[in-house]
Image (cartoon, rainbow, N blue to C red; front, side):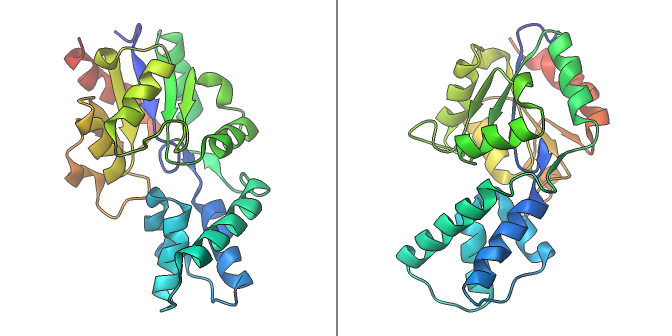
Length: 226
């Protein structure tokens, strides 16, 4: 049933638990500007909206006004720090690699569709030894548009030489669910990611609490494909 199916995954909060390194980088930037760092639980729900949003949320939480130029400079500092500390504590979620390898062996192709920069995404997956499992990777800067625009997802599928009619999205946030629905692609939500809203309330086609449940979720979704 998985022959010629393209499985497209979000990255942060779906494939990899990147929260520790993203939060550390955000707090590093805040501290370098004399701003008190934030507790991880305050920043974690902001991750799915990107690093600029995390920095802005930190500033807003501390009641600090900022200009776009100031935010741009802080974002540049974030990237400089994060590039050299991208996989200090970031790790694949439990059971991920086994689940992905089983899908490849069953004939599926894998792809990543993320709002993280493409170069950073490749670096992260490369350092964790997972990049070779994926036929395609599209970041925020790969196409003229990015999630939740449906063409980000559809373009990723085509990069992987897949067919949108034979594709499934996997993600953790409202951005991922909205993207999949806009592209008319079935979507599996994961409950262990970085969302403000419980993923079950976003009405994905299936939900998993861990990658040990992934094949069962696929078995529910795959019969809907062409």
